[in-house]
Length: 320
Ligand code: NDP
Ligand code: OXD
Image 1 (cartoon, rainbow, N blue to C red):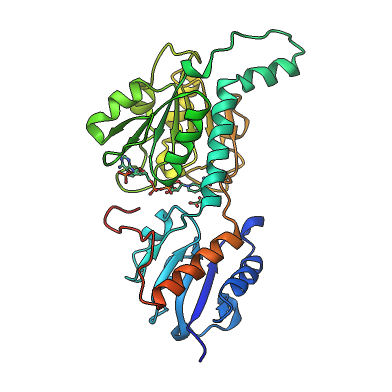
Image 2 (cartoon, protein in one colour):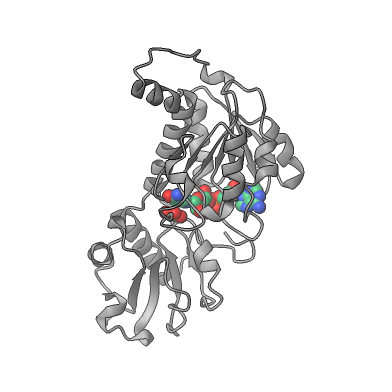
């Protein structure tokens, strides 16, 4: 008997998200069921599962026999914003490979700021042999906003590199070697200790615009880096971009690494492109791997159909 179809809805033109590439991987992982793209004459009534990346709002509402939605991304803010999203379990991507890639990005950028890369590249362009004093990692406090799957992993690696690591979450978290803070009441104490702020929060109604002037002005002053640094790989909607630019201009921030933006792709006239204190990447801090994710989805479907429970189901009230 043919099993219910899996619809693959991928709305992106970037190289990593070519739908035909993902379809091949899903066909290999879910070999016992049809895997269909929207332009392949798919019958909505046959679709039991949907695996999605940035589907157009309303795209899932036609699937009346849907049993679960699998987000091909860890962040589900775009899906949560779709008021017509079917009321079935929404599973997000929690994949060791994705976590490791994000930890690479965070470690890379923390080290680039700690090891004065912006200054050193400028010195190279100017042929200036003028090394500055190099602080030990133990003099620098990295504050991680979001101690979930990604934040906790990055925190552990930074700790191993010798940084002082602190973290902030919504509810209390305990991670060996890391001082943790939670909730609005403890946010100020967390920020006042932080030299490098790493944001790995999900975008929700509570976190929208959280990276604003008030928050950035609360970061530690007179730290070893001269001025605090922001690294945001969460979502663009977390940042107030006008505030970030003005904080970079007036020295409230010394530098920033930004992977995500309010509008993506970033418009060509954005000041961020050419800002000398900004290290910018095109929302690729942690690309998802089609082989890993398709196997993860296939395993979850098999478990569900054998009477087991889905893992990493989004709490729709919390929004992440
Ligand atoms: P998790 O859900 O595992 O962790 C989220 C963390 O944020 C938790 O610690 C949670 O607190 C905390 N949090 C949520 N809301 C608040 C709040 N209001 N105040 C304080 N803390 C809060 O998510 P992941 O670690 O898997 O992913 C985080 C985000 O990273 C994703 O949502 C996505 O937007 C982004 N991402 C970006 C990628 C990129 O390439 N740029 C790639 C992958 C993900 P608590 O522990 O109490 O629940
Ligand atoms: C994600 C992303 O959320 O790639 O996984 O942004």
